[in-house]
Structure formats: C-alpha cells, structure tokens
Amino acid sequence: MTPLLEEAVQPRSAEPVPVESIPADPMLPRPFEVRRVNAETYDTYTLELAPADGRPLLFRPGQFNMLYLFGIGEVAISISGDPGRPSPLVHTLRAVGAVTRGLSALKKGDVVGVRGPFGNEWPLDAAAGHDVVLVAGGIGLAPLRPAIYRLLAERKRYGRVVLLCGSRSPQDILFRRELERWRSRFDLEVAVTVDYAAGDWNGLVGVVTLLIPRAGFDPSDTVALTCGPEVMMRFATRELERRGVPPEQIHLSMERNMKCAVGFCGHCQYGPHFICKDGPIFPYREIAPIFEIREV
Ligand SMILES: Cc1cc2nc3c(=O)[nH]c(=O)nc-3n(C[C@H](O)[C@H](O)[C@H](O)COP(=O)(O)OP(=O)(O)OC[C@H]3O[C@@H](n4cnc5c(N)ncnc54)[C@H](O)[C@@H]3O)c2cc1C
Image 1 (cartoon, rainbow, N blue to C red):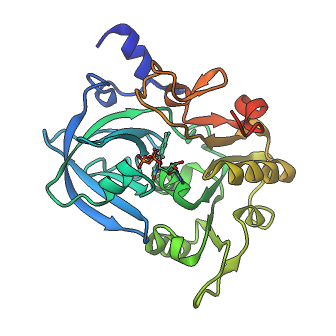
Image 2 (image 1 turned 45 degrees about the vertical axis):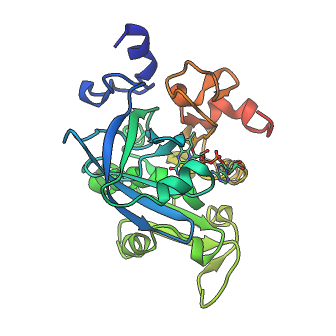
C-alpha cells in the first residue's frame, strides 16, 4: 500500500489501529460468502458473511465496510456484529434502493465483495469511568450494537449504561429479542419507544428524545453516543445539552453518500471533513456549526 493510502485508511483514533485490521489494498474488495440472511423487520435484514480466505476482518465498534453487490454497486454499511467475535462478519441494512434491496435478497452461498473496515470508532476508551448513554433512532441501533457488545463485555469499566431506542412503529423495532434480553439485566437501563403505536403495543409512545429527561445518568459525567436520522440526532443533541451533557461529550455518527471510502473522491465531504476518513463519528462540538444547517 502506498504511504498516502495507508494514511488515508488509518482512522483518527486515540490508539493506533492494529496492523492486521488495516486492509492490504483498501480499493480491492475481498470475497465474502453469505452464511445467513435474517429478516429483522419487513424492510431490514442482517447479513452474516464468512471470509472466502478464512481470515476474519477485525474491526472497532462504529466502523463500516463498503459492500459490493457485483454488477449492481457498492454501498457503505456499518458493522453491526460483536467486535470480540469478528467472524462471521455481521451487517444490518435497510432495503431502500438498488444495492441494499439486492443485498437483502442474497442467499446462502452467494458472494459479495467487502472493502474495509473504514472510519473511526465510538470513543469507548475515553468513556471508561463515566456514565454512557446511547441514543438510537431506527436503523441507527445497528452501528451502535458493536459498542453495546463492547460495553457489556467490559461492563466494570463504566458507570451507568443507558440505551434509549426509538422506532417508527412496533413493527420497526430492531433486534427485538436482544433488546428484551438486555432489558432483563440489572446493569443496563434500556428504554424503547415508538412514534406510532399499533396492534397490542403497550409500551412507550413518543419520540426517542422524550426518554432523555427521565433516564438515570449524571449529565456532567456522561459520554453520549447517538446514531439515527439527522433530525433525530439534532433533537437528541439539544435535549442532551439541555440536561447538561457537555457538547464535547456528545458523539454523532454521520452518513453521506460515499464512493471511495478513503478520502479521495470527495463525495462525502462535510464542511472541512470527509465523513469516510475523519468520521463517521464526530464529537458534536467539532461539527456543531454545520450540523444545524440542513443543506450541508
Ligand atoms: C458510514 C455509513 C454507514 C452506513 N451504515 C448503514 C447501515 O448500517 N445500514 C443501512 O441500512 N444503511 C447504512 N448506510 C446508508 C447506506 O449506505 C445508504 O442507504 C445507501 O445509499 C443505500 O444504497 P442503495 O443503492 O440501496 O440505495 P440508493 O439508490 O442510494 O437510495 C435509494 C433511495 O433511498 C433513499 N435513501 C438512501 N438512504 C436512505 C436511508 N438511510 N433511509 C431512507 N432512505 C434512504 C435515497 O434518498 C433514494 O431515494 C450507511 C451510510 C454511511 C455513509
């Protein structure tokens, strides 16, 4: 790899990324075989992929891969599996367009190309010793799930851990069985709300930001991780700040259309940043001036 490319794929991180997790050639997709496609909801699917060469793809919570559906196209998808168990490689995607629809229709044994892992990580080391609040909207729970696995695996390092999830409707709730399992733990506070109740839903109704004022955490000593639609993250950020969480302790995972994923093509430029290599996770303080402008 050229030094320039090496620098481009080395994400901003407190610690250097282990050498084995840096792709040998970030532009060359590695073949992965589909092991399982699991329907999470009516439009969201989890893919389990096994490396054709048997080498697991190591990653950090918050990182993403470029998934290449041969002949159709390539899209950025966050890794939603457990960083402590990198094989199979797990991604969860909502079928919204040609590539994601094609990926969700794959069958066991089909092959996809994988480039990555790319991007930086949730600041879990910096959060050690503090309370951690995760605010997820819809499919935003998928990029947060590796962070939840890591927090639970190293539970003693953290203060209170609170997971707040919002979905459009009960049918849209992602990882339902896992949420129920997490909710039964005494060392994790989990709250789930839906925008619109339907059927036999007896849970909370309302947007996810309504959960923030009633959650049990110490705002001045909290690191907040949020992922979801931008409008949701805007309101979540305001609510977290209103409760007293300092802006440098609020972290957002941003999405923009991207092509190369290594900071060359410029598709994902976000003000002075490239989401692919400076992000996708940003401290709110760093992007606050442009985050409030919807057109950026
Ligand atoms: C760093 C990063 C991580 C991502 N992680 C995930 C992930 O874990 N899971 C996942 O499902 N997606 C994720 N995405 C988003 C995904 O890359 C896009 O949805 C992608 O554009 C889909 O490609 P497509 O060809 O299927 O649809 P496109 O042809 O790109 O889009 C089809 C239509 O759907 C609309 N659309 C595109 N994306 C969305 C969306 N997210 N919600 C609603 N409508 C949309 C478009 O505006 C367009 O009208 C991520 C994006 C980035 C940048």
